[in-house]
Length: 260
Image 1 (tube, helix red, strand yellow):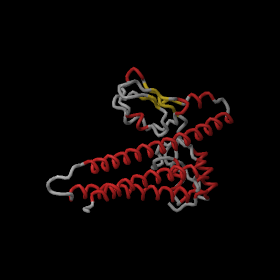
Image 2: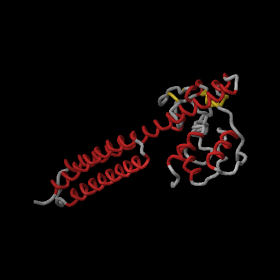
Image 3: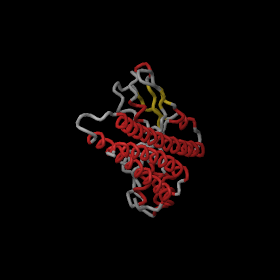
Image 4: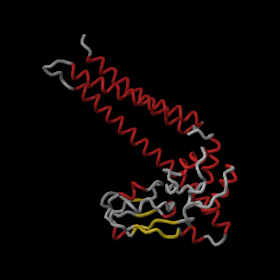
């Protein structure tokens, strides 16, 4: 991605933040990044013709008709009596707008639903409907509809970013826990009759895994600093501290297995 961050931010601000993927990208921000590098501006059905016009004015691209028909704001509705509690819709929702647990009834938080439709296909019992969003229907003037769309975009962006941070944090924690278990196992494992070589190889593998964790954390920190994103920078610094502590543990475990 080579587009200027300020241009990407400006483009992203014009997108509807439904995070639906109909543009061919996994969210509005990736589409904004693609537009900044020259991709067509007419691939956002939820944004409609008005968004295309604003993007054309901002980017200087030619005004083109939408590739797909414009889409009015929608909301997902789960027919709760038919829900089997599989959690597939929860996992698919890009803004964490579905409540529920395994083998328990699920329900949509309508006020936070962006109408992205991503929950529909994974449902194995086809119990999710898409309806006109009540917030949109309640707007009885153009000014009120614009306010609703702007509010949906703000909330959709906030919840999408929060979900991405949560998923990254959970993945990082799982990875670090796997590395800690490996280090603990290698530290406690008794030497067998073949000598220390197998144990030492395991500890070398653990150290390499920890080194990779440090490398990933440094990369994330550099990216955050390039974006001038203070929150992401603080998060990356915390990740780097955790990874360095893990690396220190791995080095100590490896050193203890070295022949004296």
